[in-house]
Image 1: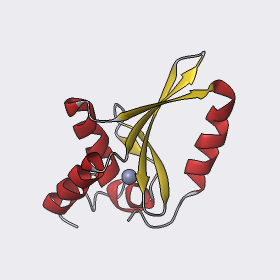
Image 2: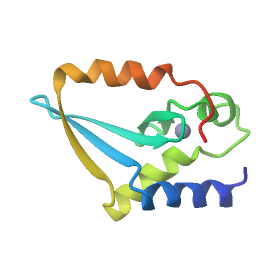
Image 3: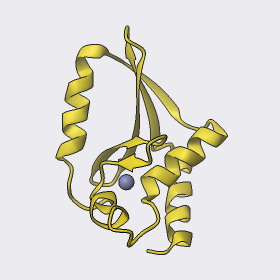
Image 4: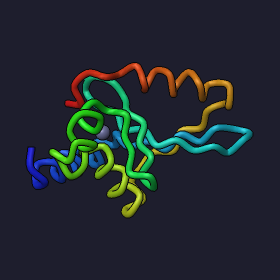
Length: 107
Ligand SMILES: [Zn+2]
């Protein structure tokens, strides 16, 4: 997948509103999530980190410049086209664990 393909997949995710900002109450903790076909991925846009297997196996190794989830969050943030989902603090760990379990394809 070249950069052009990554960007177009990112734009598709933004367009399909698969970029979500979870806000946990009452702590106000925030978590970026991109929903893919096989699960959802946690993205830390400021640290440039994503929990998908593409990031884990190809971005860290330098094979790919970024994964499309990271690109999607950056784009959605610029355009303010993400959905905000409010959750209670006690659901935070559940969501994090669910996300980290996904080590399959990022398609
Ligand atoms: Zn990713």
